[in-house]
Length: 509
Ligand code: NAD
Image (cartoon, rainbow, N blue to C red; front, side, top):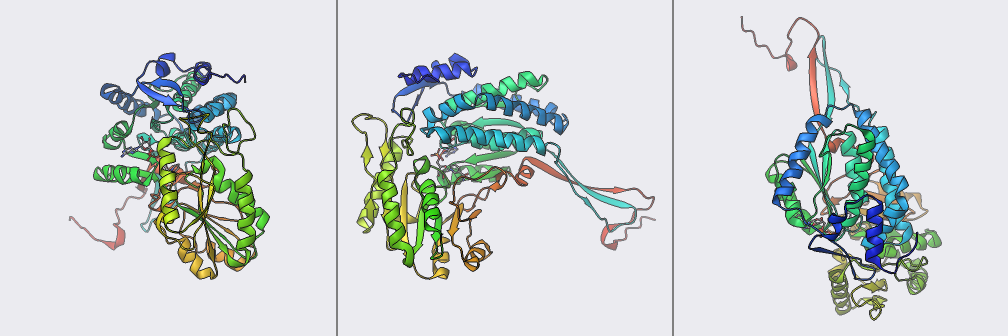
C-alpha cells in the first residue's frame, strides 16, 4: 500500500477501509500516538459508566441466545472471522506496526496468529468432548458435559495488541461465551479495527445476537468494571505482574475465574555441546526482536565458561549491526521503537543500576533523538554480569540481555529457577542428559520449556502461560478451552433400584 508521509492520514484511511466508524477515532479526548514518530494518530473516546453498563448488559443478554446455538454453528462465525482476517492481513498488520511499532513481518505475523487460532477454534467447535465415566453403582452411568460459561472479560496489553484477544475470543466464542474486550489504552485503534472485522463476520453469519463481541475503550477503570461485575464469570487479564496483583484479588474476592498472563523474566542455558550458530540466531531473535517487548523476551542468558567468550563475541557483533529504526520507513529494520517515554526511562534507570553493580554494558544508547524527539529508539543492550543480582531478578520491558557464565549444570538450573517469574525458558544442548533433565520435574520451572530454540515465538497449538508471578493462566491451544466452559458431572440411573455410593444405606421403611 502507498506509504503516506502523514501517519494520522494513513491510520485514518486504514481504519476507514476496515469499516471503523470515523467518530470512534476522531472525536474522543484520549490521544493515541504512534511509537514510531511519537506523533498523534487519532483520538478515541473512553467508554463512560453508562456505556460500560450497556456493554455488559448486552453481553449478558446475548449469552442467553448464543449458548444455545450448536457449537459447530458457532464455529462458523469464527471461520468467517478468519476469512475477514485473511482479507485484512496486510492492513491490520500495518496498523499493528503503526500503533505498536512492530516490524512488518511481526505485524503481519501477529495477524497470522489470529488466523491460526481461528482455524484451531473452528476445529475445536466439533471437539468440545466430555468423558463417560464408569459408575460403581448397578445400572448407572456417569458423564461430563461442558457448558458455556457466560460473558468473558478480556484485558490486553500493548505488545500483542490483537493476537492475545484472538487467543481468548476465538475459543470463547466457539465455547458459547460472549466477549468484552478492554484493550490497552496505548493500542485502542487495532482493537476498533478488529471489532469492525468481527461486525463484518457477524453480518455474513446472519443471526448472531447483538452484544456477542464488544470493545470497551478506557484505562484501568474500564478493566475494573469487568473484574468487579458479578455477571462476568471469567476475566482473562494479560499484562504486568503489577496489574495482576490488583486484578487477581478483585476476581478472587467474588470467586470469579481468572486467567492471569503476567510478566516474564525468561532465561536460556547454553551448554558446551550447543550448536553455537543456531543458538546465536535464536538468542538474537528472542532478546532483541520486538525491541525486547515480548512477555517471552529472553532476558537472562547463562553460558558455559567453555563457550562463553566465543558466543559473547559473536553476540556483540550482532548487537552492533542489528538495524534499529522506523519500521514504517525501512524494511531492513529489525528493532523498532520502545512503546513510549516511560519505557525508555525504565530502561535507562535499569542501566544505571546495572552500571552501579559493575555490569559491563554494550549498547543501550538512544538513537534518532533529534529526528524523533518524542519517539524512543534504543540500541539493544548486552550486559555482562558476574552474578544474578539486582535488576536481573526482575523484568524491565526493554531490550536488555544479561549474560552470565556458569560452570556447574545443577547450579545453573538453580539460578535459572531462582527468580519470581516462570514464563518461558530454553536450553541449547546436544547432550541428551542435559536436555532431558531440563525438561524434567527437576528442571526448568516455567510454563514454556524449549530445546534448541529460543523462549519466544510460541505457536497457538500449545497451551500458553507460565507459573509463579507469571500468574498460572493458560490460553490458546491444547485443552485451554476448558477455562472458558463450566464442567457438569451427571450420574444417570437407568435401573429401578436406588443404590447409594460407597455402600451407604438409608432405608426410609
Ligand atoms: P500493563 O499491566 O500496564 O497493562 C496491561 C493491561 O492491564 C492494560 O489494558 C491496562 O489498562 C490494564 N491495567 C493496568 N493496570 C491495571 C489495574 N491496576 N487494574 C486493572 N487493569 C489494569 O502492561 P503493559 O505495559 O501493557 O504490557 C507489558 C506487560 O505485559 C509485561 O509485563 C509483559 O511481560 C506482560 N505480558 C504478558 C503476557 C503473557 O502472556 N504472560 C503477554 C504479553 C505481555
